[in-house]
Image 1 (cartoon, helix red, strand yellow):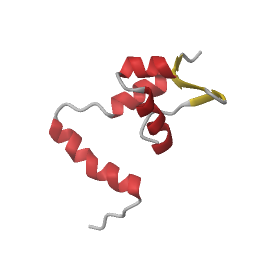
Image 2: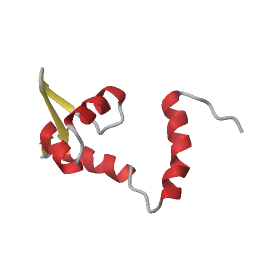
Image 3: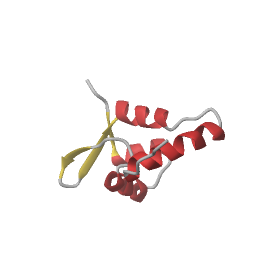
Length: 81
């Protein structure tokens, strides 16, 4: 059975402001979320851990190497060459 985090638990665990989590839900930058009702949001712990792992880098160069591809994919830009 899946473990769910309330929005406040997600924010506390990853040290972010609730407003940041709200922006990420709109922009798609955060982990997948579950709407439990009109005003209740939850996150599956498994999704949060996967999301964090995808953003874990051994060094800054590795992060920078991923940024252009991620930015191009997000903006819909096409890379030729």
